[in-house]
Length: 463
Image 1 (cartoon, rainbow, N blue to C red):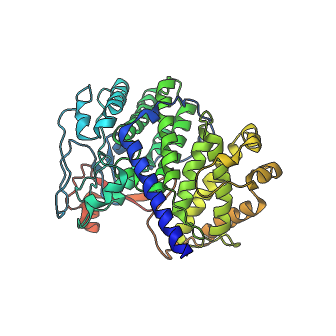
Image 2 (image 1 turned 180 degrees about the vertical axis):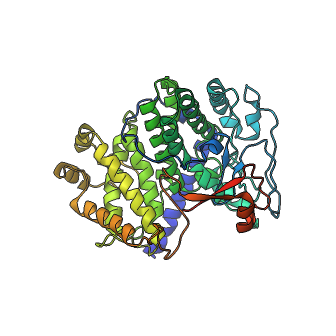
Image 3 (image 1 turned 30 degrees about the horizontal axis):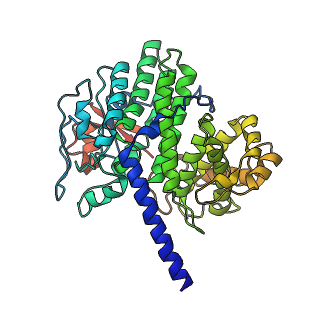
């Protein structure tokens, strides 16, 4: 009887909390008004990565994306598509003219978010007057569109029983994993090209913020994807700061960008994918998103708690998800590589964190933390005792996890396939694959038959 009563009361509390959160995200965008304009330069930009094969950066600047094998398709509100047939009503619409005042956004966002989205649109066209916005809610394979006027929990019912619709298509694009790559291309470019590429990176982030208010639309359904997006945006902006001397990333723009990351981090914590006794790569993605926000947004009053949480849970996830030999518990070579990649990025970020910030965690009141799991004193002891932030056990498992990736590689460098594989990555700095004639590609991949590929060659990515 006690267990049943606990389940009932927890269910009631969850419904009350959910109702309050829904009201919050539907009635205000003032939460983005906090001035969080300072961010740390944390990760040195790589100088010697080979970007000669990065042929897609021109496509990305034209908003043409190959999403989960869709083929390169321009994703915008004013584009025509030849989608597969989908049962039921689709939420497709066409916007032929993007007026400077942003009135067209009334088709895209809820009325309570319209004023703020219009302000961001004006900021975008002040940077690039010819910018064409991306339709972030679209499944380019089926032509189905979700709705950013509705909150995230309503999105599943829109596509229910719609054959051929895949919610992971917009999720994949919304990770914004192409942005750090664009900055790396900018680093190797002429001054004029560098400015254009950095402008494109900033405009695409602003575009996402404009069309995806916090908690609205399909791109806030999965906290792991939000965490991956947090990390890639912050990394891209970090590197932009390191190579840009034009003043494009001024305090006004940074305040918009970092405030959005801050609010996104709160959304992750409100919907954290934590289960007692079982945490997966999804939860690890949540933790990384919070850790990145905590490490970078040092002006945010919540940043120290986020950083503390990130250190605590990275240690916990390594202990719970990786065996002593360094292999991941999920029994999949691909998930091992994804989780190990996340651990590597987390460790890099933490060893780059200034010692003054780490020392300040000793004074943190951990009782103020209102989320699950709770904060413990372990981080204070750990940070105080280790020169490299994390435990010896963590570093040992990380090295062994990397060694396992080497061991399972075939002679040609490909990883062997064992267990589930969704081609997931955390930060995608390089692309591997080969060029093939477009006609050959359409013969190899049936879903490319209706895709108009303007170039003679198709880049066949090897994930």
